Image 1 (tube, rainbow, N blue to C red):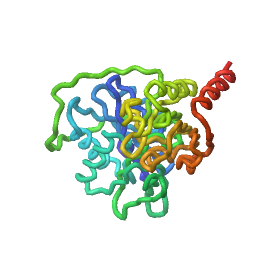
Image 2: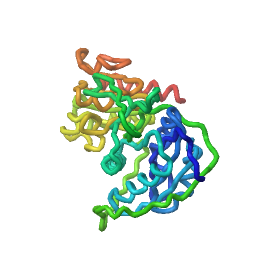
Image 3: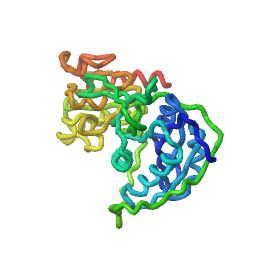
Image 4: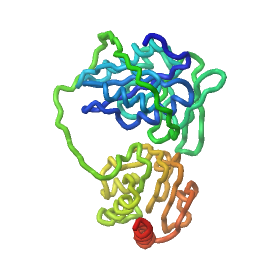
Length: 325
């Protein structure tokens, strides 16, 4: 494999410890297919064979693989992106809008002198190049960004891209990556925290049920989890609920928490402060339950119920369970 499509879009993907592609792969490759020919770069600490095959199934016209040293913080990954970009001459570089993705995007942008479009919720191509769409100012406005030079680096919000690419034949090449010699921090040791849950991970979930201060207590917050389990959804929360100690901060949705863009977002007892709306307003369908009919959440809700969530939600759970049986 020596030639790449002229409209190549380099998609940076990572493989987990078992060598499997991590979650954002399908939507990143789907978004790339909407604006060009997806070329995947799989970063893996071990074998990348399974991940490369999966990338082709998800639409990669070609896949480059690169080994990254465990414990190295960023430099090896950026070296690989630089080598892949030099080889493919892409029209854009897509990375997931995760902690690691933003780190790679920023480092590579500085090294290459490229422009960065952060937290994109949409992608398109016009006569001049790649355009990224954004939801800004707490979701109150939509904006577009496009560089006037070079190929943009775009971090894509998880769950924002619905398009999926057609499967391709496997076309894999190990990437020759030269060590840049750039200084880098490294992890000497760590203690893994293993968490098991039958619920989907909040970031990237297709359905999310969130609770706010109106839920009232940590004990009452179990109702949010019960509704989420009925729907097969992830559990989220407003900052007010987190600050009140109802649930851990890792579940916080909003400007200072996780940004989500699911197919369904259910807000229970959430007033709808602008900081919260900033993290969920791009959800495809929003359902709100609040006893305050003037709550700002109703301004963006597709469906709203003004009422006591402790009466509404149990009835909804009962009805959904009846329909399942």
